[in-house]
Length: 463
Ligand SMILES: [Zn+2]
Image (cartoon, rainbow, N blue to C red; front, side, top):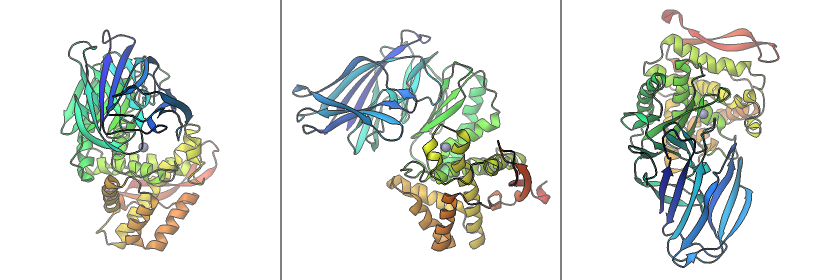
């Protein structure tokens, strides 16, 4: 059992810095001499662990535990600092420290940072991970250092939260917010932001409806979902969001002019990640399914629930498909984009578009072979169910399910072709009669080469 007590502090809600005290009790968690107690990610992608005001102190029934501290590679884009027990521990282990919380940074909003109204961020920059295993977590808030009427909120709920089960890094890879937010709550969905803003209020209302629809589609009737917003300060900060387990943080600014419709798509995409998941290691192995699936359902589900018109749906499908066929990297091997994380956005987009186009194709195959009785929905729901109990499912799980409709040989061949970057013929049956496909001449991005791209258009009777 891992019990966290968080003590955020800000002198005033418009203060330019704050602090956070962290007290962790590890129950039934002993360590032999030389065994790992905890690990902090000194740097995750572009974000560094917060500066300590009070350094990490680890104690047990016998007093302070001397630790051997090593720094090393912590996996994908993470530099880890590990704390190993210098002696055998006795009784509960307590970990205590505090950090300075600076002004909130730009996207990705992993850093815990202050803004006008409170603080937001992920645990990556202020909470450690523990020894590999399954744990039960609780988070309690001590808000005595905050101005009146503040709340504390974690990805799993507002106020004190208990009984959340997860891996060793659950507390680190989830979001936290403390302050005096505005909020829209609908069923199990909550959307928080600090400064009053009509545009954000509209996102909050629309996305709550999408969440309920998506959660129903994937048969999820359990946990809640929280969205936290951060107002970005600089014109250079690009608006956008980052999804973690059961939560999303959205960075917006007064400078962004992103159309409402594409914001809706962004949220719909990110929320699909709650269910269409696979073990993506080594990084890139299953990106086609994870990102392609989010692209697919963020277009199809809002259309089915009626918040996209046929024209908007066509445009949404085309934004995804045309972008892929115009991408000059569309023939690269599937693992190549993974090695170029954040280096080139065009190559990074390849698995998104490739997965999307392929899934429209797979959906069409399933519908054809079963006379419309089954569709991609059956596999997506099945794999979402499987992922709940086995977080290590990968492409093999897809192959097994898809092969039930098209046969093992075809399933394997298609996946090989997909990974090798061969041409994909997309499908239109997912539009259930609203759209059809044509090939039209176009120009490849950057190179301006003449190419043919697949494009969705309204069917005659629907025009
Ligand atoms: Zn995504």
